[in-house]
Length: 369
Image 1 (cartoon, rainbow, N blue to C red):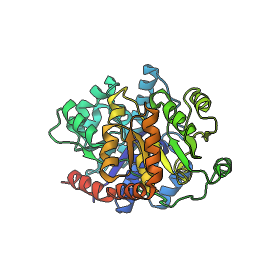
Image 2: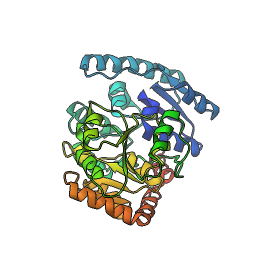
Image 3: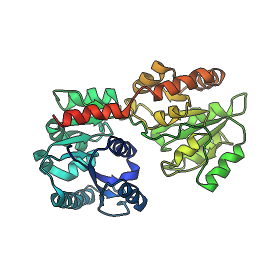
């Protein structure tokens, strides 16, 4: 059986779709090795117990930087580590699974002489360095994996590919799927407990300008029935403080390390997904959250975007509405609350509609032809 060498120039735990990929490989009994920039000791121990080796460049990831020269230096440092590590274990029929755009560019043109799969997570329409830099690697890859059908079609056009990339949604391979599970963090547990029995509308993700929640906050504050807005994620600016002026009783939990964030998600009545129209990457989004919500049977209140409509309208797993209109948001929340069992059933059907094992088996079969 062909061995898979998974390479990632990021912190492994932060790239959840790739963790899903590894969990599928382990479930299928595939032989694979991981070369990664950083990961936690506990992750190394967990995979070691499964007989899987993780080769780690460093324990703590580099801090983010916008300095292009520093970024290139880091790429080169990881390039040396990754190729040196791989050469020590190389087997003739290995297939490289390249875990991100940064990983691809870091490995450089030497990658072109190997059989490999590109796992691309974003669209990069506003990042020409990535969009153009990946072209040569995309055209040479055995397979390309992306998380959304629209992105797959766009990449085929941009890169003049002969076939459409494989689509594997950002669905968790392991999901608790039970409501109100135990919360690991005592402080977070206290915050949720203090809400009591009021329904929770949960936003999870980055809190930033490109995901404006002003209208949602106003709508929730002005509802005629009790309901709480809960924010879970990093605040990139004083957005939480601003939102509290619009919805004074909102609860901000901050960032919760995955997969513990799902413990909080399990308490939600409705989950929010909001992206604006500032770039194609937002319009054709592929959020992990839609799967994290639907796995619990939580209906989604989402911005009116094509990729979200593809899932939510098809299965009735929630409602897409105009996030610039307080009336639209209010009506959508009311509709979900009044028909909650219907939308919960649709959310469950959405989650069950994609089988990760089947999808990855199809990709692996192509790799081994």
